Length: 93
Image (tube, one colour):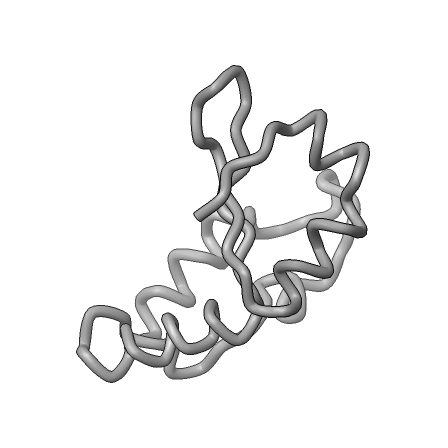
């Protein structure tokens, strides 16, 4: 895995993204310390699927966005707090 600095990545982002898209994995360093890895999307998807297959990752049964279930109202107009709503959702499972 080749390592590149943040400044180098910022100056030549399209060049490095093309390499990642072609299947290469790049490490990104800040002050000489590895802080991130750029990996192709397919590799990340394969990793998630392998984690699910091995039982190390359990996907959500009902994936949903918390904000889809809560009507946005001013804080003063709410009768229940977001904490109360979250506790109810957890107890319902």
